[in-house]
Length: 367
Picture 1 (tube, rainbow, N blue to C red):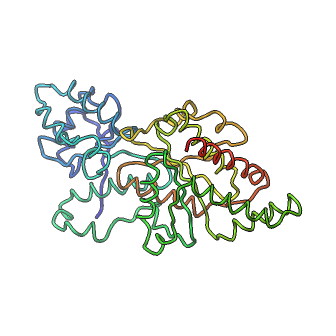
Picture 2: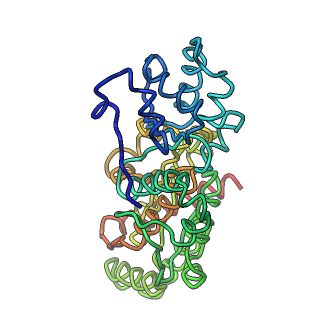
Picture 3: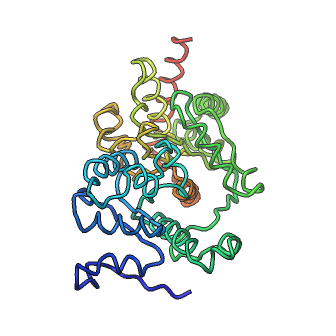
């Protein structure tokens, strides 16, 4: 259907016709920014939309929990005019008041829509808005299954991801939330692709591959260089891409000194390993320990941040709780894995054996 978008700052020439303009609309969309409810004209729009029972869609940018709390507090503090509906009704209509923050952040059909910029995410944001706008129009209200059956095509949206080659996803026990994330990755691909994804404990993987490497070195010890070449051959003939999935939130490096030391060695070993690529995933939901990325430069051992490890030289993929955005995040992780160029370098190979030996020694002492 054809849609006409009316924007008050562009088309409203007479402020006295504000309520009339809202009355003429089929759907009322609010793009919230701090101070919205301090504006008398903005409150008049909201009051009119509620009194006329107009569908209301609220958009915002920023952390879901923080912005939702700010919106609610600002509404309660300012929506007390003589012509204002009951505050409880305003909260119910705009914020789905009564839902928990976790329900609102994980279910895009309720509450305000968080707008996200960036590849894939902006398309998902538009998709959410289109569904809510179109779903409130008379045509689709009389045909409730048409939108869901046909879907909406949005430019830039990410399609299904296929895993065509055997792939190891390595997870670390003390990186809480990482295993669940890896299992989600298997869950969003086809059954055939899922069979190509193997989730492994990174500590066991590193120890086993080190043992295999030592066996090769024992068989061929003519020169150090020859032994290295043979190690490369042994590891490559596995035929699997391998990725350490590192899940970043405020608790990632918040364990005991021993746990942090062990994690540091595991990460160091993977960085030095010529056949392992790192995929960093940054939690965005503050209810799940999400924090600003600059916090990791305070929490992460400096050794991993500095040369030669440069842990944060690659951009971390943001992971969200809202289903539509989470699907984008998971597809971006898989796309990064399938697009990785796992190059073998002498510098990584030279440091790999020593890194794993350090880790094994530490694990043995703790055991």
